[in-house]
Image (cartoon, rainbow, N blue to C red; front, side, top):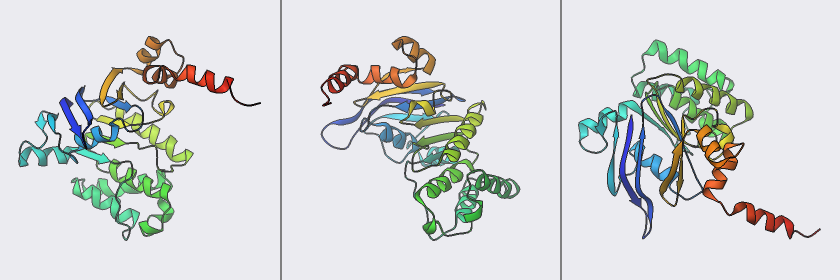
Length: 258
């Protein structure tokens, strides 16, 4: 379980996050969505322990982040964080990095090697698995980061825009199916930020909508669509976040030169 309590954070004179409260139960997959610059990545960085909150706290499976060295170590053994642009050791190979991350999380060697091979094949990295990461394309590097996160078998995943970064259609489909399988496991908890509603409509247990640093709605995709009387999650989110957008579109399209 992830428990976010009265969380505040800022980089300057204006708060980036303001009194955010959100509880994600064990076994849930919750997606954070909202406009650019509204605090999604900051929220995930705080949950992942990359940033310290200015106020409030975060508990993961009953242990509070940054309260003690012992609790923080235990949390880090259970949580894997994939930023939108993951850092990778460019002189290492994809296989070396994935195996190193698995060892860091204590994955047993028999499981580790087998799982690494299956992940590299699944994401079309097998042929380049022994090439330096520096020689890989942007999309291939993102796949390496995804494989490194999945190899951990961690019970808590914090994923910042895992579908971005130049992934091809095959990788997008593979990742959707893998996340769906993980979400079906009662012991795995997933928190992620995704900008495209269509990618997560069938995956998410709940969608938390963030605007101007505050969570303004949090419910299942079906209930969000129903409450906004919209056919798609994307249309419902647009109506919640930008209720003026329809009028702006009509005005723009009506005044477009012919």
